[in-house]
Length: 352
Ligand code: BGC
Ligand code: CA
Image (cartoon, rainbow, N blue to C red; front, top):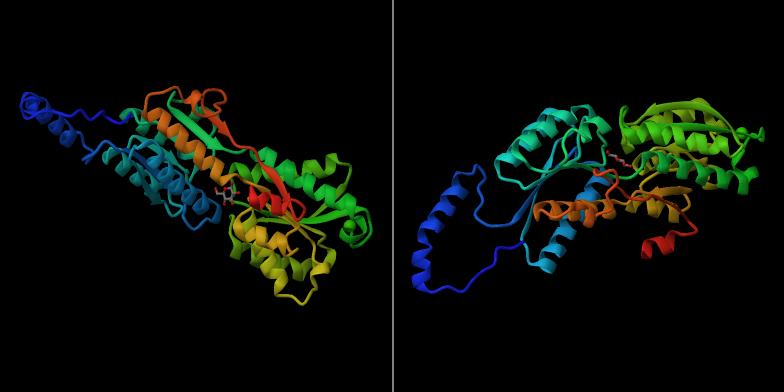
């Protein structure tokens, strides 16, 4: 990939001067300020304040550094924070393109805006990798150089539901506080319209009821993936429903930690808390599992997703077949598996 450096005499340098001049001109006129031959990846994050997303971005930076020393190819990451604003993100992507980025990675703010981004990337012939926030398939299929790296929302919901079902069956007398055989729960949902909010909510409940347990929903609301918002919701529901709440299902760990914050404010002993389940296995959530506050979570492989994005970007830059670099499904998708995390496998999980 790296241009081969030949040792050259002064005479051969003179001979190649016109060529060098043309090259220099081409580079400086090409819109991008490209003094070197580095691979430039523009990465637009929907917001850097999101625990999962900022961890993924950190992995990406670390992996790019490691890869750089391994292959001797300079890799520059330009990372932008869209602050949950799609218009801002559009401007950031325009800037990435005008700065000569070779590949774009977009964590789209508003999933319905994907077609515009695909068209922008196609017009400049710059491959586009969406990640974590999944556009509809029609938008992904719009151009052959558009990809999605993520994890199946449906799978995470099903695994969370199974985790709760197993706990319920194992220690029924502990969790079924009113002894009616029905699982009374509240649901903390992520941003409305996000594939992970919709499908985790649906599949978590489906796994419990498919397992033969009847459920009763006491309340549901969005807390937009956010810890403080979740804490406020749970505080209100604790006032309203008291110890009728047997299970708190949360679409992600940050909101589950918000529930823990709200319960910690009460004088309830830990053994009387409802069962709380999250998704992500972020570092603070794993601490909460270790402390027995969070019953369990489902690992959302941030590092794996970052690695897949990088491998894909490198292959696309080198003009190689991306299917040789990542496990490509239907020519456009890379899916990372989820797995359950509870106190039982926490240590093994942390070591891996
Ligand atoms: C994660 C959430 C995160 C969201 C952002 C989800 O996959 O589970 O923690 O807030 O992505 O898009
Ligand atoms: Ca009950």
